[in-house]
Image 1 (cartoon, rainbow, N blue to C red):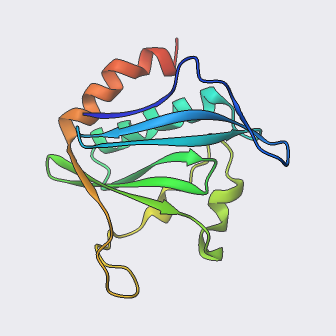
Image 2: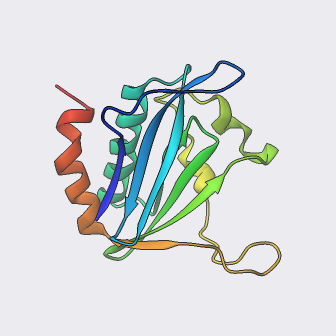
Length: 151
């Protein structure tokens, strides 16, 4: 299973500096669940949800790479299509070479920053990654698109 969603009924997160975020959850297969906080400001709830569907539809349309933004351009699930599977890696975008992602508006996600998949980091260690069937991405779109992108 693949899913990215905001957690219903969860109160917003507010930090000491006053920024607000919404709690969400990512599900990759049965063995990985992770909560995240999506900052609300430049992007709103509907912006994130539309981007998640857009990112999934890119893969379904045959794109070799895509992304799912969890934190307005700073934290992404990078996604690469490999046949009938999608390989996902979580990346924190802190390097200046990806600065365009930090300021991108909801309809301007720079997917080209995903780049080529690397299974090793600069120190030679394995990068954590998850593999989900493309069919799970299709089911995600079928389940969530009418709610996330009404109309």
